[in-house]
Amino acid sequence: GGVGRELVFQWSEPKICAGGQELPEPQRAVPCAPCGVGQYRPLGEAECLQCPAGQFSAGNATQCSTCHKGRYTRRTLALDTFSEWGEGLSTECAFECGTGGWRLMYDSVDSGVGHGHFVESTLRWEAEAVDDAAELSFVLSLECSEGCELTFSDNRTTTRRFTGGPDAFATPVEQRFSFAVPKGRAAFEWRFVKSDPHEISRDDRAIIHSIQLVGAARGGAGECLACPAGTYSPN
Image 1 (cartoon, rainbow, N blue to C red):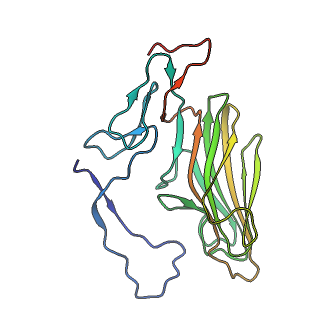
Image 2: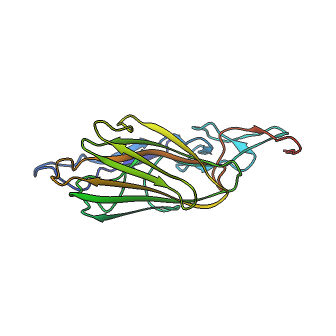
Image 3: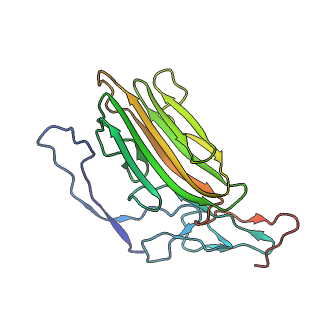
């Protein structure tokens, strides 16, 4: 107990509000966000840690639980908070960009706003799968008043396009999508494209609320699984 964080307010890019607006004062001793599945936070600490191999956590835990004999864990690398770049996560933007690419929004990441008549805003994530049945999933919503498109791809097998707008399949409602991932190093890419010749929909954006890779080389586990036939776990 007693561990908290400081909440500091910053202007969202691009800054479009009129003069005279003031940012709220920082808030101190804000409770830390709960740790995710496969993670734990020791009492008195601020950082979430990944459960070791052979242990698991359903989330919001102070310690991990050990799997019984005959059971094992699959590592899941989860991104459900977005506060800094790195760990394989990067972005870039081309053409008439209102922001330098995707924006970190803490509980999500979005493709930016204030773009001009044509933009390509790209989010990339590099990770390694070590499981033959690895799976990538992400939760997506598209907030587009006109037409926009998000293309998801990896560097090997998968390409999928989502369109947003009044008559499109993808909606502002959050939707989860999952894809099988071959074993090995992978580079995942989400490319947001918007053509807006009259610049009437500058706030259109794609939002990714979470990303996770099940069967990853690193990460924690949220459950114990029974060992496949012909294999065993002594721990």
